[in-house]
Image 1 (cartoon, helix red, strand yellow):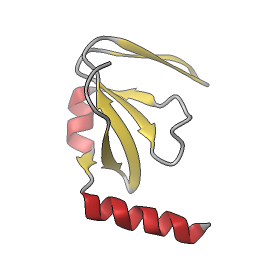
Image 2 (tube, helix red, strand yellow):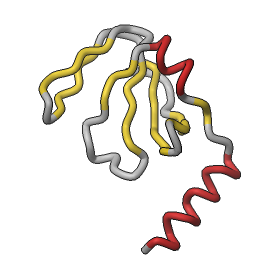
Image 3 (spheres, rainbow, N blue to C red):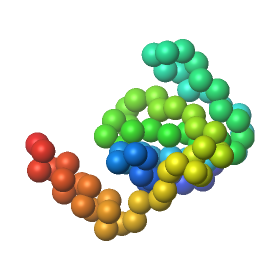
Length: 83
């Protein structure tokens, strides 16, 4: 695993994602999920302790978009108001 984690939007949900440079596995409650080199390892930004899930490169690049710093700030403020 090399490279930084980035914050992305996915269907009104913030996720942390990293593009992987080699095949990888993620152990989830549903079993072991496999990703290939170039796929993304995605985790829910609300629960980074969770294992996350692999997303195929082609699907990720069509359905996720990078969040900008202002959007991240607004999301954090909204989350803080909930608690």
